[in-house]
Length: 351
Image 1 (cartoon, one colour):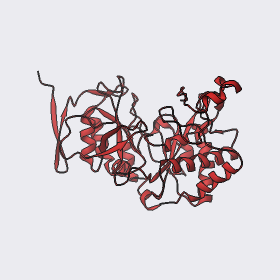
Image 2: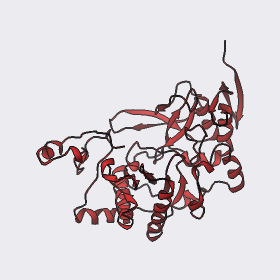
Image 3: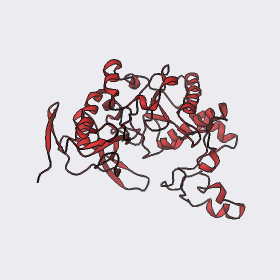
Image 4: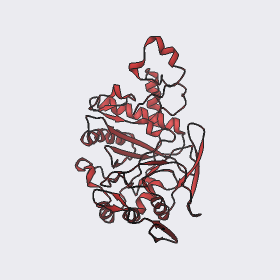
């Protein structure tokens, strides 16, 4: 027996939706079709956030209480009007990923059971040169959103001193993301280097709150980790307005700096966000007009290196990088094996 289906019209494109009544969010019972309606209600915002970017999809065929599938390659069966971009991963392999250019692409992706959209920080015209720097505030086990808000104040101060405009949003999970639009002059290595230098400056200003230590055992449970590695190649985080895979359908929600101290993660769901968007519009609407040059941060990186503070570990799936310290947990290191491990990577499990 054929599964139930319906057809929706999104601009000039018809999207066939199978199993439209399948429950995707168990807390309130929102369905697959409700999820499509949500994305169409905030389409100007999320299309702006993911436009022309390679996009990894987090798919939940049985709803968010079921298994999650990480989909890098475009799912089979895409209509001819869905566009792609080829990207290269640290392993050297390539893939054709979804490249959203219009609202119909979102609807089709949800038809393929996508709940979360995780774009790259570069665009299709030049995937090797990021135009977005991402500041990821990730609370440790003993910290929470409240600590992230405190760190965000310091981040905002440093950005103001640099003359850079930061665009905050909730992660929809535990922390806060802050985006800065940058000139696409540099590759992933340089942008990550700049992000690390910035993170270290914030850590110096708030050492009791902030850590840049890659290894969990060094971070301390009550601090917020500034994840500089989110700026490495092929690292993605949920887009602005992306729904997250939780039973309540939380949303990664753009917020203003003024309202950030008072927001809570559950304020923003697929049930509440459409009305907020209808009232306020896209709070990140001006992001593409606030482009900044990361040269000052590269100067900070040179200053740190001159003071003996060099690179930090890359994620475990990356090839060993020039100048990178041994990629092994500190508790597993000693003088006897330092030389042995310095020339090879130990992927470990940093996060």
